[in-house]
Each structure stands twice: as C-alpha cells, then as structure tokens.
Length: 487
Image (spheres, rainbow, N blue to C red):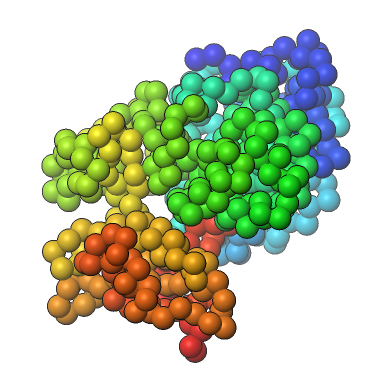
C-alpha cells in the first residue's frame, strides 16, 4: 500500500501549500510534517496513544504523528462522561494521552502520562511504516446497545475508503474542505482531516459550526462542505434571508451531508435557493464509507447513492435470504464486504464474530434499492423497522412525509406494541409554533395522503425538541422518557 500521506513525505519540498487551518493556527504541509515529525519519536514505545480530540490543529497533529509512528490512536470525545471514559481507557489501555497544553483533562486520565502537542515544534520528516493491515485508529462506537466497542481500523481500510471517495466526488489536491465536525469520529477525523491530507488538499475547520462561519470560509475559496443534517437544516433556515450565504453555497463545488438522513424538505430548500445539490453518502464506524451519490449525477433526495468502488452490498431477509429485486420496494438488512471494513472489535472476539454472516458484515440498517441499484435507507433494524398490520414499514419515509407539513419543524417515528397491529406507528413531532401545534388527526391524514393509509401515525406526541447525540442523530431510545408539550 502506498503512504497514507504522500504530500507529507515530500517534507520541505511540500513548501508553503496550506494543509490545515483552525482559526489562527495555520499549518503548511512542510510545517505539519515538521510538527508531526517532532512528536512521532516520543510515541514509538507506546502500544496505543489516546488523543484528547478537541477541534484544534493539535488534534490533527497528534493523529498524524501517531500514524507516522505506527502507533494506533484512540480519539477521545472531550464531552464523554466519567463512566464511559473509564471504560474506554480501561479497554484500550493507552500508554500516553496527547493533548493541547491548555487542555484541562479529567481525573479519569490522571493515571496516563501526558504529552502536550506543540503545533509549532519542528522535527525531521518521518517516513510512514509500510504495514497496510496494522491498526491505525481505534474509534469507539456510541454505545447505544451496551458499553462502547473499540472499532479497530487499519491503514488499508482508511486508504481504500478515501480513495473510493476520490473517485465518487472527483476529490483533488485543489479542493479546500470546510467543516465544523467533531474530531473523535469517522466523519470529522477520517473524512474531514485525513481525507484532505491524503489528497494533498487543505481543510479549514471552523471550530464550532455557525452559518456565518460557513459563509465566510466558502466565500474565501472553500470548494467543499461536509456537515450533518442539523447543520444543513440551519443553513436551509438561513438561505432565505442571507444573500452572502446563498452565494457561498452556490459557489461550492460539493456539499456533502452524512451521519444521518437529510430530510427531503431541506434538500428542496437548499436546492431552490442555491441551485446546488446536497450529496448524501452512507457509512458506519465499522465500515467507513459504503455508498454515495456521485458528483454530477441527477439530484436524488432520500438516496445515499450507489456502492463505492470495492464495496459489495446486498440486502437480506430476516432469515438471511438474499433479496435480488431492485424494485424500490423490497426492504432488507444491508450487508457489506470489501477492503474498507474494520479489522475487529478490540478485545471482543465474540462481538466481532456475531457482527458477520460469513464474510458479510451485518450493518443493522434496513434499506431498499432502486432499479439502478441506488440505496435508500429506511432506518435501523432495531429502532426504525416497524411491523404493523402485516407490513414492514421504514420510519424514514414517514418522517420525511411529516416534515413536508408546514407546521412541523422536526419529526421522529418509532413503533410501540399494539395488541391488534403488532406495532403501531408513533410520531414524535416538534411543531413549527410550539404554542399552536397542528392537530394530530391532520398529521396522520397528511401522511396517509402522501404515502399509504397503513403508514399513517396512530399516535402523535409533541415535543419541544428531539434528543440528539453529538453527531446530530436522534436518540430514539430516549424518546419514551422525553417530556411532551402536554406534560
């Protein structure tokens, strides 16, 4: 396998080409190679290193240094609670924790030797190890079904996924990526930092998301924007009254949304205002990127596109029977295989074995495929597949139908036990005007008219807001305990 970062290997020859910009911290490729080169030798004796993954240049330098040293890095979410942090540290047993000099680390990291990252340090250029299958990163899952599991990602998997995206997105060294994603997760760290560095391009990280920040960075030469649906929703809210934002988005070469489905009405609002299509893609921590809408293809709201190069994808019934039909209606679980897959769950051979059907990884996501093979996600098998009245119904299409109603700001759909139907469809709605929520019957009729009568919500509950995680995903398991507007 070739080096992950060919542009870094050039060292001083990389010159003044910009690599990273985080606020006032700007590093050229030569400066990044020197800063990572100064840090890498201090890491070589560690089996693993933890990285306090704040949205700073220091985090990027720390991860690059670990990759150059051939030492797996464990990104830590700075907002992680003490119990989860103790589990991650105990499970991954890092020898060091890398952090910014000004970072105030929690007591749970006190037992680890601390190494402060200096983005202005200068050291020799370090050659990358030639070990494609060696662990590069250990990224912990969100822990929605138990304690977080450490997903071991090899250098081979990272390279394969980023190179497939190069093809799908026509990603080049001329691209300037803008984003404000957290750096402890696949989306922000691997796609958002390692992706531009592998291509030899540059990244401008906003630190925290703001409409003004996006408009400014894109307006100053940004060509690509990565975000999650919450971010694009806020941009869609703003385009009607912000001409500078419209110009900035219209001037971008590529707008990408991921980590959750982007509602169809936000696609429509952004497209109408800017003339630009928001591209959706699909992936997981364990698989990295699996599918994407291609650059230059026709708009496909609600679709995550075709499998990427090297990715094999199939849908299966509950009994494991493969669904061969590309009819846009047959729903099954997505299973995948390819060079982009993770190596194992750290210290969990049982969980690793259970995650596979032969050599096919069970994603737990339910989808259908259009006649051209494009994939449409309908939800998670555990939370978004509703079996009601003999039908298999995906929550996602009902959510999009609800969002098409002018009095609905946000919506989530779940199933609840029902003695007659097996499960009844429950809609959790954030009204556009909390003081005047729409009538529940009107919302049910709206869905029935757009989709089918058996897909209408039987129960509607109004909330002030939907519970979400750091990536903007709705925490559906927290919905039953959420306070409604009637409480």
